[in-house]
Amino acid sequence: MATRRPPRVRGFAYTGPNRYFITICTLDRHRYFLSADLVDVLRSQLLTTAAAYRFAVLAYCFMPDHLHALLEAVSEDSDFLKCVYMFKQRSAFSFRKRQGAFLWQEGFYDRTLRNDEQTSDVVAYILANPARAGLCEDPLSYPFAGSGSHSTADLAAMIQSRP
Image (cartoon, rainbow, N blue to C red; front, side):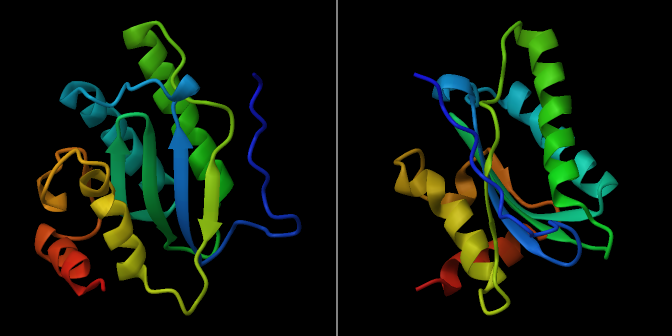
């Protein structure tokens, strides 16, 4: 069964000072993100690519078959779509060389946060995902989640402040 690429918002530039909550799924929802070695490579590519395209990675979580992340533009010319496409390209190339398989499904899901939405609520949601899925008890103990811009203490405070 063919899957359709998730649509982008027509007329929205995806540039400038915005926060984006993204979900990128593995091809056929294959459970690739079970190995620390692989996730470390992908985490590094995510953080490096985001920095190159002028984004802060406020939170990320590599679930077994998908990635959640919250990115925040740090410049007026930060280009979200170019950043995500480049991350997917770099990580897919690296994965294909290592594993001999395709990594990502086509496209990705995104949501631009509104001004009245609290960053800490979305960070807490992302980091609590493994606990909700039964992969760990304490969200901060999950080895494949974290932040490129917040300390563990900051993340703990965000999780605890969520209703």
